[in-house]
Length: 171
Image 1 (spheres, rainbow, N blue to C red):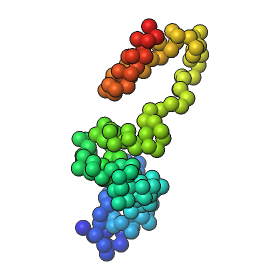
Image 2: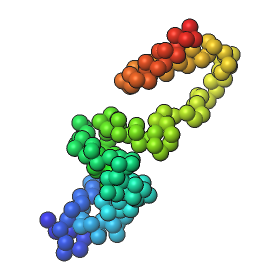
Image 3: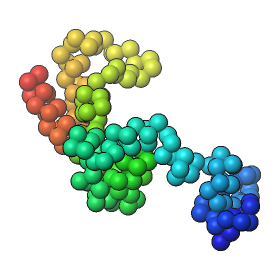
Image 4: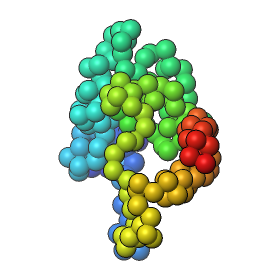
């Protein structure tokens, strides 16, 4: 199929625009898509993360952040591979985090020093703490139990086991 815009090159991108109640689908070649501001495969590789991963992983050296040994892994939901992530710096869907868990944890450890968030804790506006301070063991115990519940719901059993042990120490 030829590009709807230039009518010269093969269309490789299908762009669907919804305006008011009408839906318009354009079939575009890569050059025309870039002119319209659509991010194409080439543009994704030019993103800062894509460049960084490409530079670090180039040649699949033993110290590579995302080793080529996992290239055959596929996401169970979207079918993207670890190689796709290495090439573009983007995951295909939210399930990719589960499919590539071990490789992503290793990547986060190497880049950030940890695979677990250790920053500020979010509090709901107006929560006020209910009279319990962060130094209060009851407050800490309630927080750990809430984290444990979320970890189990998210099937993060490694974190759940660690939280369970910390709760036992406090109890």
